[in-house]
Image (cartoon, rainbow, N blue to C red; front, side, top):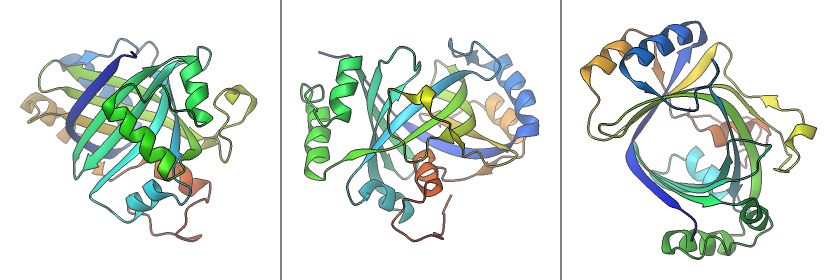
Amino acid sequence: MNKKNKVNRVENKFYVPSKYIDDLKFCLSKIMLEDKYNKSPRGYKITSLYFDSIDDRDLNEKLDGIIYREKYRIRIYDTDNLYGKFEIKRKLNQTIEKISLELSEGDIHNIISGNYSALEQDPEFSYASYRMQYYNYKPKTIVEYYRNAYYLPINNIRITIDSNLSNYGFKNDFFNLKSFKSNTLQKPGYEILEIKFNESIPKSILNILSAFPLRQSAISKYSLSRLDSNTESKGDNPLISF
C-alpha cells in the first residue's frame, strides 16, 4: 500500500512586499530550521494539478465563501522524475486538514485518465475516488511556484514563502510541461507567506513577523489560476474575495 501522511493545523496566509523577502528569510533562518529542500535562494519548485467537477463545485464553493470545503490535487516536486502524491485538502474556517498519498508515475497516469484504483486501497482516499467519479471530476489547471520553507519541531510549526506563482492556462498535460510557456499569476510586488501551526506560535516568531508589513488574505492559488484562465462560472468580472 502507498505511504500516507495526515496533518491538521491552523493555516493563515499573507501578502508580503517583495522588497522585504530577503530580510524575512534571514530572520526566520536564525530561529527556525530550514527545510532540507531549500537548496537555492528561491527554494524548491512545486507543481500541482488540480481537479474539479464538471460544474466547478470546488471553485464555486471557494468564491461563495463556503466554510467547509475540500479540493483534490496531484503534487510533484521534480518534473523530470514524475512521482509525487495525491492530496485531499479540507478547510473549516482557519483549520486545514491535509491527507497525502504517495504516487508512482503509473498511479499519476491512471488518476489523470480517470482510473482511481490507486486511491481505493485506503478508506479516506476511496471516499475521494467515489466523489470524483460521482461528480465527474477532471484535471482543470496546473499551478507552479517556488517555495522556501522553515519549521520547528513543536506545535507542527511551518512557515513558507512562495514566489513566482504561475500556471499553464488551459493546458493540463502534466507530462509535457517543458513544451509549454507558463503565465505569471504573482501579485506584482508581493510574495505569499503561509503560517501553519497547532495551538500557538512562540513569541520569538511573532516578534519577527510583526516587524514586517504583512497583509492577511484568503489566498487560493487554485482559484487565482482558474480566474486567470477565465474559466470561472461567475462571469467575466467576478468579485474576488482574496
